Image: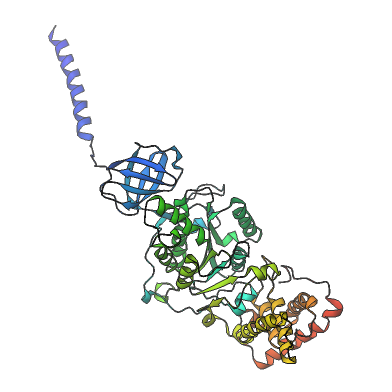
Length: 522
């Protein structure tokens, strides 16, 4: 081989070596240690995992097919995991990875008007949701010094509540009753009434039937309430782990808006299903059962959730989070384990009676068994003035009505009290999805407290209410605005409103017999 060929070959080899050296120097190998575990067994909603010695409590674990789980039982040699997805495709021996983070949820204005699951996935066919922030679903409740007293009312649009059982912004008011007594209807009416009131709403459906959830979403859409509402849904066929995390994830979304200084309303529908799902998971994970087979920490489960509802002080923006948890009683048993727990946690309860429901008194609010321990302080002065003695009069009527059923002889005063009570009950009736405005409520309550409706036949009470509401349009704009804002009325202004009511009621028998209360008239 001549020298020229040898030099050419050396240059070629040198070029190859130079390229290899360049690649070697420019390539950085980052070696990271990743802890891997193995599935030992999978059952209904849980998995037993071994090999993750460094995993912490409530750490998020990643399973094959991008399925997540929460480390819940931390034992010496294995971990009990709550599954958050379709676990039917998992098998013993599959690998499990640590994520090094706890369960969190996407938060932001992009969620308003959307229907999502507890993992933040869209369920409404409007495309993926992209947000800039995420918050842990489990967060400590605000400290006492971060809170302010409840001073602003949350108008529900339901006369029986706004007049007799007022709710304040930042309050936790429990709604309970047997099946099919209208618990969800009250919560949805409250959401509908927040339109144009600068209150954001979060509706959390826990383990509900698909048909029930679809009906609720349709009502919200029809009334344009989705424009200020976030809907979180877990259906009956979802893993119990999703039921367990749903209210916490929904509360983190609500807290995001509260920390921006906004007023937020959250509805948990319902926490009975939440408690049952937690009981199922606890028993599968072999946690010791207690009363009614619930685990011993069931009280802490709900207390750490509802304590996050509050009214923040001005230094933190002055936002509020009002909670309306719903639970189901069995055979009107309010002393069962879950109802008594939640009654002791919340600031009052609204009890819906199946007896009143069967009589057609809707909403079926049992005033005697219901109470609001905070909202009365936040009730507007005009409401307090016209409804102050209404609850007592209604309670006395219910007692007298019981005696009257047994054929007891009653004096004239008792008969008048019964007639007055019957008008109160008739005025408290209200159609579903038709909340009343503040001005309409005050005018009707004023007519009730002054006894102006006592001479109206019960069959014409609806017509009388319609006539009173129509008469509001004849008032001076300044007076109507004062009624709408529930500011105290002077004696002269009260006389003007009463004169209008009397004029409207004088014509009820002749001109308004066929009128009924519709949404537009409200």
